[in-house]
Length: 485
Image (cartoon, rainbow, N blue to C red; front, side, top):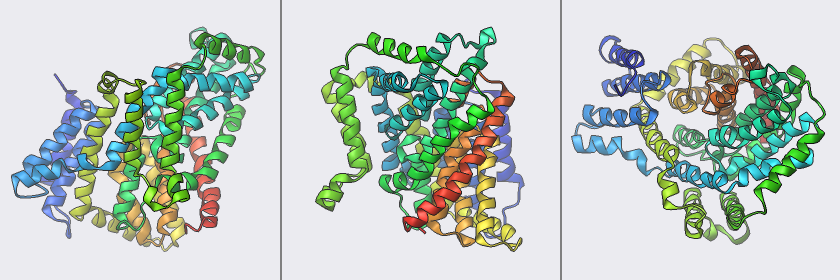
């Protein structure tokens, strides 16, 4: 069979229950309610991993087309179902994932990690900060946080830990592997919050915010990066210290680690031409995403973010750093484009059919009865949104299901639109800290066996509290200084 029976049956039952049994609430159009039924079924299938997410997306597109919930005309209904494949934000992430393949193929990502360890690797906490710096440098151009944290950084962590005989199979994980793997993981959500291009769901957040505000707030790459810079950097500085206090490594002095890293760099040889091209391409991407040419020379020299990503990929193809075969083999990129398009399409039409406004109105009414001001009301909304991630195994599914309604409700309760947009955007990445199934990176690092389940969840909860306090308090003050609210 191409599907898991139990999760599939649960998804179908939930969709059928909403479609056929639950009465349509007053003020909700039947088409909106039926689309909600399909949407809930799709999200349930994703959470239960009934099928690969790309396959579920194809079924979702088919269902929207065949049921005609968006349009009575069959041809136009199918056009609606496929409409999000033209979204520049979706292609921005897909193309950026293809570009990030060059980090692994050329070895540039690993080289950066070993370079930092060679400089700061004389203490275990120094190795931790080396991992943090590597994450920070790679994040703007690596929209797959799983590839960044699990595919590039984690193998380095394992190699360093093994060199100090810190091995879960020998019961010696506490020597340093436990600490380094937790730093490795918890730097991932923070850097994901710092750039639109640092994790795949961020462009979805941008899209949902723009739609909720009638394009009044359309977060650019630069605006997002500047807004998240100060709280993100502070969170990255604080996190290794807190984890060091929670799970202190038995081996604190690591004079051999720097030499280990130098040996690895020697093994890799001189920086290759392809690595230099990769580095230059990243420089071009960052300059254009940050809008530097437009700042210096005027708006006529501005380049669209998605166009910039295509330019970067073209450079790598023309120079031979990546081949077309490499691009065709980037299953993660093509998969992301497919499921992103399906989920964005469903979320878009739930909004167009008025369901998001209805649900946010319900939230507003319920919280409004508490008689609180906008600050505690919106903090309650944000915390509820963040901690419901305990029941999600996909950040994209969570954001698609809940972001728009919670954000719209916050606006209705009086939250400054830009302030609440940034808080909710930060929470959409911070929620990755919570569980060992929160995002694609977590099962890779947790599966290496350096921590127990209770240690992982304890660290996740404490770091979620620390991070959200930093982003709300320090971030809020920073955004006030920037005039964002």
